[in-house]
Length: 345
Image (cartoon, rainbow, N blue to C red; front, side):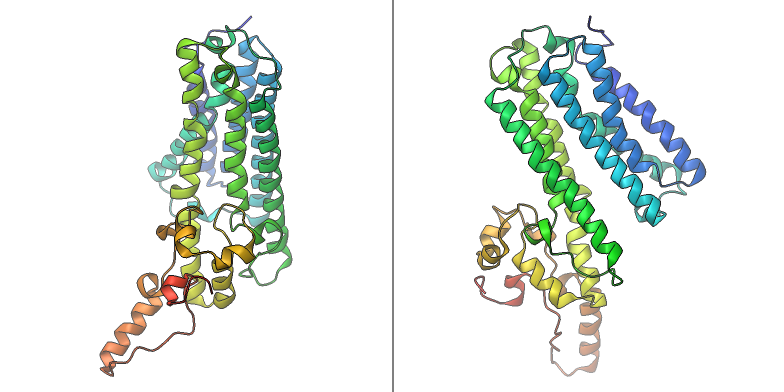
C-alpha cells in the first residue's frame, strides 16, 4: 500500500528530506572545516530519495525498480569516487574562500539541495501515488530499451573517464600534463557528457507510462515536466559549475604559466569540448560548426589578447617604450579564428 506524504507527487517530502540531509552534513563540514563529506552528501542524497520514494510507492513494477536502481547506482558511484579522491587530495580548493564564512559556505549547500531535488524529479514522480494509481505498461518499451542503452553508455563514459584521469594524474610527476588518451581523445569532458546522457536516459525510462498513453491528466503533465531535471543538470555543467570554470580559466592558467601551452592549444583545436567526435575530423571542421552544433561557445574560448593578464602587461610595457611594435608571443590561442588561421588547418 502506497504512503501519501504531504502531496501525491512526493515533492514536498523529498524536498524536506533533502534539506535536512544536506543541513546535517553542512553542520559537520562548517563546524570541523571538513571538506571530505561535501560531495559524498550530494551523491548519497540521490540514493536516499530513490529508496524512500520507491518504498513509499507500494508498487514495485520493473520500470520503477530499474529507474530507481539506475539513479542509486549512479549516485553511489559518483559519491564513492569523489570521497576516495578527496581522501587522497586532503581538501577541496573550491571552498578555500568559503569554508570560514557561514553564509557563503551555506550558499553552496543550498545550491546542492536544489541540484539533488531537481535532478531526482523523474524518479520521484514516477514512484509517486499520482502516477502509480494508473496501469503501467510492461517494461521493455522502445523508450525503456533506449534508456537502458544510453544509461550504460553514459555510465561507462563517466566512470571510466573519472578513473582514467585520476590514474593519469597520479602517475604523472608533471601535474600539468595533458590527458588526451582514451575517452579524452574524443572529448575534453567525457565525464560531463556521460553524466548528461545518464540523466536523460533515466528520464526516458520514467516518462514511458505517459508517452505510451497509460498515465493521464495532471500526472501525464507531471511526468513530462520532470525533464527539468536533466535540463537543469545540463545547464549547470555547461554554464555554471562545469565548463565555464574549466575551459577559459584553465587555458588562461596554462598560457600565463606556459604549462605545455603549445601542446594544449593543439589539443583544444582537435578535440571536441563535450560531444565525442573523431579528433582527425574535428580538427578540420569549420569553426562555425564547432561554435554551434558542437557547443564550443565563445564563452569557453580563451583569447590571449583579450583574456591574458600577461598579454596586457606586455602591451602596457610596449606602449611605455613607445616603439610602436607589437611583440609576437610564441604562445597562441587554440582558436583558429583568434590566430588568424584558416579553419581547415
